Image (cartoon, rainbow, N blue to C red):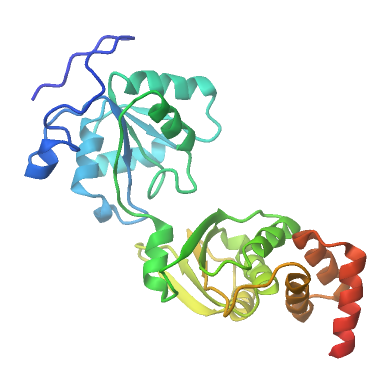
Length: 311
C-alpha cells in the first residue's frame, strides 16, 4: 500500500483508523500494511538489550513519518537497529511549547512515533502532556507496549507483585526524600523507585528510617551484560552500598510492604521516630521526622526524650 499523500498544514484523511491499520483488521489477521494512519504512536524501546525491541515496534519506527525522541544521538542507535531512516525531532521535558504544538499539527495529518531514551515513554520520561493534548483533539493514540525497567525489576524481585506503586525518582534532598517516604509508609504494597548510584546508599538508609525493617531489592543494569540483583533488608542494603564505590548504571529499588499498615497521627510519628533513632543522633532524628510528617518539632523532641528514657 502506498503512503498517503500529504500537504503541509492540511489534513489529508480522517483520523479514524483505516482498513489495515494495526488496531483494525490487519492486527487480527497478522497482515500489516506498509503505511501508518495519522496519529501518535507510543513505542516502547529496549532498556538495554536491543533484542528486546518488538517486531511491531520496529515496523512503526520504519514506517512513521517522524520520530519524536529525547536525544537524537541515543535514538539514532535504535533506528539503525530497527532498519529505519526516518527523520527525528527532539521532544523532552524542557522543550518549548511550540515544539509540542508542531508535533500535534503533524500527527493530525501524519504518523508520529514517540520514543524515550530507554523503555516505555511516559514512565519517568516526557510525553504525558503530549498524549493528553492529542487525545483532547481527537487524534488517534496507540501503543506498541514493551520493556519497562520498573516492571522488569518487579517480575524478578521476589517481592509481592499483587499490589505495587511506582513512585519514580525520590527528591534528591534528604529532608524532602524522607517526607516523600513517610507519605508512603502506610501503603500495603511493594514500592518501586528509580535511583542514581551516588544517592543509592542514602536513599536506602532513609527508607529504613522512615519505613522500618522491610525487605528490599536493588536491581541494576537490567537486560545488560552486567545485570545485578541484590536483596536484603533496607538496613543491610544501605550498609552494603555505603561501604562500596557508588553503583553505576540504571538502578531500580523495590521495597516490600510492611508487616502491617503504619498507623496515622501520633502512632505514625512514634513509629518513624523509633526507626530514625536507630541510625541517627536525636537532634537529626527529630528534625527529620518533624519535617517528613509535619509534626511540631517540640512535640517530636519530647517524644524522643521519652523513647530514649525507655531504651
